[in-house]
Length: 320
Image (cartoon, helix red, strand yellow):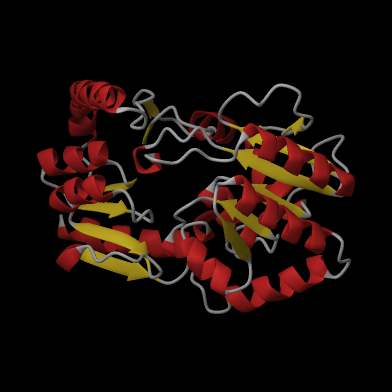
């Protein structure tokens, strides 16, 4: 296993005792054109470093298959070694990345809700990638970390530095403060943020270790934030999820149609509308039970994505 130093990846692998090779932190792709050109140059240099560092290791390992989530580094390794490559993806706006990975990969694998066709290599699966770890057959919430008492709400702010985040600004500082202030009336607000919080914002840091996040999500009253992944995770756990983003994703729109998630834009007016809806749900004592009912209905017949990935890996590794 190789792992980029991003978000909680290294922390989780360390907590779970999984050996891995660090392939660096990578770079960002947003900002003005000069910053994007610098980022593009940095990504090219980073790709060269990844190949030089990992290719000898991977050659010694002699894999029968390469699997990744949207990693052109991994796909290139597989192509250089002449083994099948399975690339999973769920973000429609990463157009350039899709083109590169489609050229390098044996198959491009996406949720059925993915709204872009990726050609003859495209395979779709029912459900969402979050069910790889959160399918009922895989996940049971553990005890809450010490000191955590219900009710509580979880918020997540992102850095907007990914390539597909071009043109996004996220919630304004004023909107963040107002959402935290208002939601604090219904319980403790725990905040996870990729960047510095605005001055004066009141909110508690996420408690416990990085491996406790899903247990915390499962026990929360509501999720409110800018992360599509965490919004989808909350939704499949049966927690009302508010996703703040101007574009959305195919999978978030599907979860919204199923009544598990709400999408709103990033401007202050849209955030205010989202907050109004969130307050109405938190004020209703029947919300928790209703969302668990919606979750059970939405997950009927949905596959265990981990089992699906293993089945696909065995099938394509045999071809190598």
